[in-house]
Image 1 (cartoon, rainbow, N blue to C red):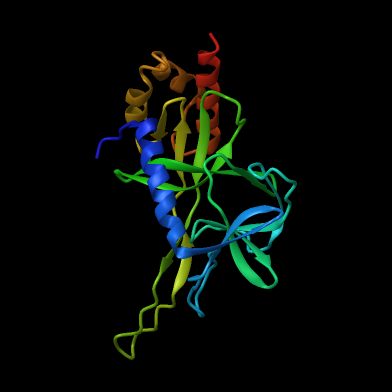
Image 2: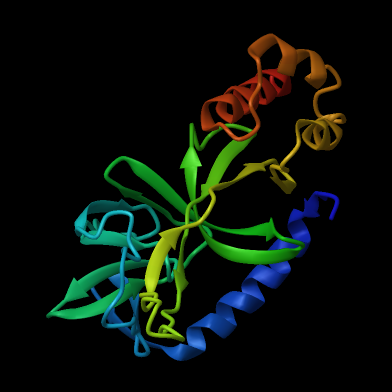
Length: 229
């Protein structure tokens, strides 16, 4: 399917509808630190390989969208796409806000609407580079789950349930769009032609590799430099 740029205004409209729907399965409470949400249906298999977390340790974090200073210890559940913390031995999720930035162990996360496999998805993306620039590189880093399968014969072994990391997907956020980085460089050239007419020449100068974060960061820096001219 050819890659397309999606209108950010359409994103925002659907984004609000999805957030409202997502909150119907939560129990909320207020305290002096803001509005937080508890997911009453939090469950994962009891036996599995791997982990739903990149790092299962709770770590100190900063949260930009709360008026009062709030520094709970948080971990990112990359399978459920939730920011988790504990209160009185119960597991809670932070409310998802598109205006909120969460920093855990020097990793910056925001909640975005983004194009994914022909659909609009909503979730946390890791921001790479400065947040004040015109063009921002974002990464979707998720973990998937595969159900276990019993052996069909005595000559085979059971396949255990397991969590495994999915392929990292990258995006470039512009002032009006969210561009999904395609698999092929020629497709990316076509998407960026209106923004950077000499993009093909730039790719040759830096030996651009479309699947590498370092090359994509150089690309966004180049686009930001153009925007200032």
